[in-house]
Length: 292
Image (cartoon, rainbow, N blue to C red; front, top):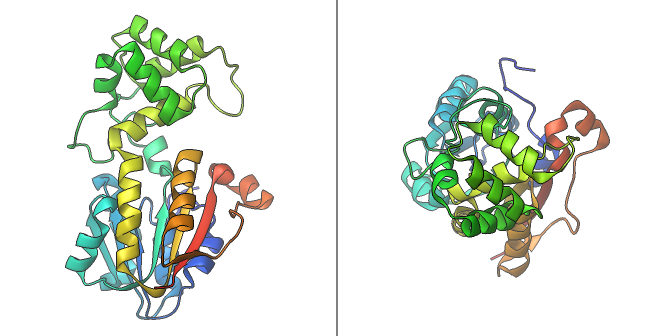
């Protein structure tokens, strides 16, 4: 439910705040500002003088977050940028070193339900899917130009879709694809999946969005940059929503010198949270601390 504070309830909020070990006067970076739910809670918990650097590639999300966080005044520094550039942005804004860095890698409710940019398969919106609307090729460009082999590889690798070849063949046969709802119907018919809790087009849309925004490559760059701006003893908290991202996060924490995991098992939302906030059901949280 929308309210004055946030557009939707952020996933694993209590666990994220505990993982960051928020303290009054601390400095924190939210690398995926979104609807500012986590950021608002960080600023509240670090009162009266804690500071937050919020980063988002989506200019519409940034504008909405400015409204949500306006009561925190100059304690909130909000910048449009991709989190691959955390180090440069943090240096320019005077946020080195920081006490904690948060990555919440899910799409915001605003992107799925409000914006007509093709993120949702339930809306007849243009197939854009770019977080930054002025940057790079769109999902429509990929759907309209890739070969069957290229589409199969993209949907299979980034969407982990076992029926990728069948879906790719159907997409090519249906060209031109008019909008997101059209693509979702093509995928539904081709996949053979029955409509259940998860829409049959979920994996295909995930693959296209990841490809359009180079999400996995930028995540790897962002994690390296986050480590560089953290103080010794600072916390890295990440929330992933699918296995590709979570695998990158897990391997980065496990293999990076000077970074130790604080939770041996991934943290998942409680049954009560999932019942209250269905979007949180696939969230997986990891916490690490910088030791050197």
